[in-house]
Image (cartoon, rainbow, N blue to C red; front, side, top):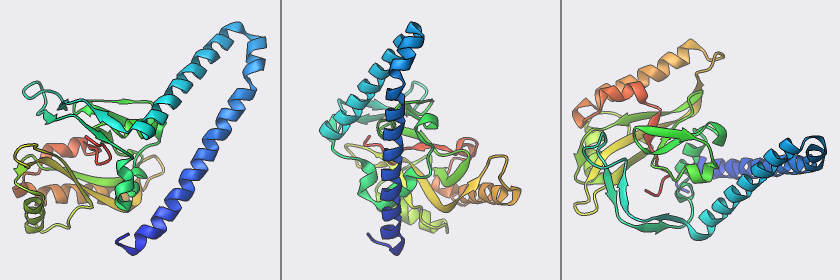
Length: 255
């Protein structure tokens, strides 16, 4: 813990995590009690329910394996092969134990700025994301969409490489903007270059972009994102990224 907010936040995070687990267990229990009634009422619905239960068990097994074995990458390109519509980044085979979000409280805070599992968009290619599956598995993907309704993340993409993390830090400071909470990038396995990093600033209070949201905070959010992008132009900020600023390299992915 390296800041006063961190300990308080992690305590609240753990409380909500436990409450969510209890809620999920309760839903599973209520669903189980209805199995016999469904079977008696409609055999077709009973078969559909059986398939649903099998899928749920398979998902549970995959989540269990993720915690027992860890994340395994067998080597290959992330975000497609170079020259095929994406830049493509090579990662050699590796195994990662645990969850990236446990490495620092700021990463757990980032988790709270994402949608829940049923609406969470993730993918392993910059050009395609999908929704579905447990959040713990989805967040192993290389790309993720932040919450579109309650926006708590400002993301700027730098379309250039840096020799080191320190060079990136000094370049951002030279542009006169606050350092981001998170910088996420692929690191070249040979040269150590930081490749096309995404800079992420996390807002303490997310801005509502649903019909209940107010125009003032929404305009301030857009303005802050645009001003950050303009200020970082000399560092390689991609102005086109403003049109898709919710999609970003996933700081929670072991890749």
